[in-house]
Figure 1 (tube, rainbow, N blue to C red):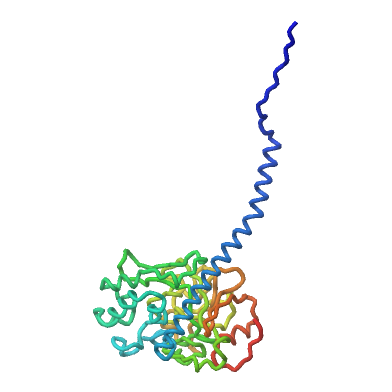
Figure 2 (cartoon, rainbow, N blue to C red):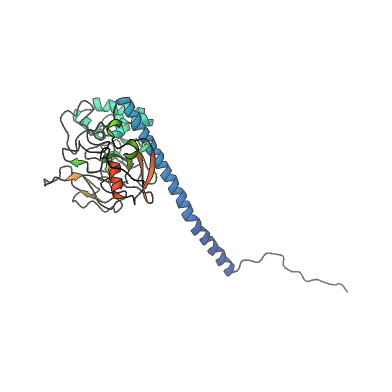
Length: 344
């Protein structure tokens, strides 16, 4: 009598609910472990990119110094005041260091366009403000051209451009994440600011020999965070009037102490907007009379975890912790205070 074997299913059984939950839990744990690592890698890459930008800016300033006998002017006009004579010459205009070093950061065409505008823009009154020079094609190009060396990619608003309408409408143009060291006090009151103890400030022409504290112990550049507000003039690159592309070491990196600038992102009032990562009090371009007079200032801040990147006057770059000893940070801002700086 023939024998018959029962057939067993050779197909793979489906996962049970418990097995699926275990797999999902394992995947969640792996994601939780990997995400911080990915964020750290991304942060390290952003920090390195910023340091590379600062390195380029530092070398550009030092090369400019070799060619011209001094560092570029921090700001052409005195603080918050247009002086007579802005239609000719190289001083007394709303121009800053970031324009003069354009040929040294591989932007010769933009530099040539700006030079053309500053001598030919019509009416002549517009020559004092680079951002108003958009009546010519060259003006539109300079005003709205993004310059990667001025952008921190870690800042979510890096590369900000304010058009105030469709290009090439009159606008504030591009903003920069990098600011020059004006010293350890303030930028000065309206009509002042030419006697600061940093390296680039109103009408400055600092030479390396003026840095008595040593170029390796004096800051050249640091960082600034941007806000989305069109009326926040901090870090605007093409209209330097109240120290927009400068910083002071009077307060430490990433401080919660408010900046004090002309406009901080609100149209009226003195409360400085609602940007907790970039607190500021707006005092307008012509602050109300007071004794002592109100002064302008802004502090170094970044989106990098724990501190800010800096370039020093010897061309080196480094990351400085926001927990740096306050006096050490202040001393780094002065070129000639004679203070010994401990390890930082």
